[in-house]
Structure formats: structure tokens, C-alpha cells
Image (cartoon, rainbow, N blue to C red; front, side):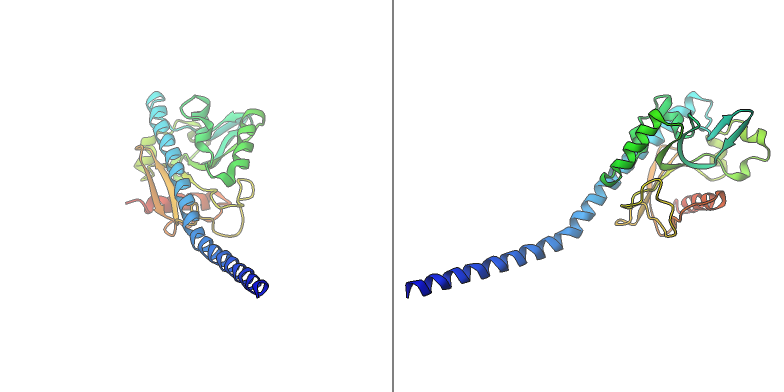
Length: 243
């Protein structure tokens, strides 16, 4: 009789254990979305902080450089290359765009690299490239000038001021991207849309007045910008979304 009671007690304890495991599993499943959202909010907050540093750096750089924006121009031999929109911070060993802000100590390099944990390897690669390689990238796109702003190569090489961009209605200086897991800088250019903060549906933009705004990503359909026209359209959408 005692053996039977002991067996039943053991069997009942096993059932309790299984029920407990199931309950814990369900609770974990319910908690996961909230945890993911919490992590996404922390990442987005850190990203906004980075962009505040970028915006302030542009104000300081402008005040020290006749209010000219950092150019995305690199010279080689007797010719030159340029970009109007670029995540590059160094090309042919020459700092360009926001890379100039890094070189001249307005911001640390980490301020223009994605703070997300899943981008740590990519950020480390960019840091290594900044020191050792001729080309280095950023996790933020920098916007220098609109194609309507110049007519000749000489115009392109001339100074371009924050006031010039603002006159065209383009106060923004940088926009974040590269925030979806598995989309590193090199592998980001795929056929699908790529939201900056997919769980939150937001994209951060830094403006030359020192502000940072988080816009509804559905208003700025971020598609991989394969060419200049697409990049400029992307940037125009960002400005249209601004209140």
C-alpha cells in the first residue's frame, strides 16, 4: 500500500513538473515580444544620442569653417571623385563627409557607428578599416548637396554651405540605417525595403539646427539606394516628412 502511495506521489510530482515547464514556456513566449521591444527602444535611444553628437559636431564644424559643410570629395592623380549621399567616411585614405568630423576631433568614430549589439562585428570592421585601410564606412548616411546645387565640376569643388542646403529646404545632415539583424554594411543592399528600426517603425534624422527627429518609417520608404537619383529621392522624402 505504501509503495502504491509513493508511486502515485512520484507520478503526480512529474505531472506538476511538466505543467510548470509548459507554464514557464508560455510566460517566456509572452515576455519575448516585450523584451525585444524594450531592447529596440534602448537601441533607438542610443542611436538618437549618437545623432545628437553628429548634429552638434556639424554646428561646431560650420562655425569654424565659414559655415561650409564637410565635402564628400576625394582627389586622385589629376582627377577627383565625389558623392552627394554617402555612408563612406574615408575614400582612398582621405577622410570625407563625416569622416572629416572624426579626423578633426569633433566626434569620436564610434559616434557614427551603429550601437546595436548585432552590428558589433560590423562596427569593429569599420574601426579597423578607419585605421588600416583606404576605405572606411559608417552606419549613417551623410547628405552633402543636392544635384541641383551645381552645374560644373568647378562648382562641385567649390565650397557648399549649410545655408545653401537650408535654402533648398534640406536641413538634414544624416540619417540612420543598418539596423535590421543580418544586414551589415556590406550586405545591406538587397531587393527588399530596409527599415531603420523595424520593431518601432521609426527612422532617426539629424538636422543642421542641432535637432534629431524620429520619423514614421512608412513615410520614408527606405529602399536600397543603388544610384544617385534614388538616394536623393530618399532624402527628399525625409524632408517632406519633417513637420
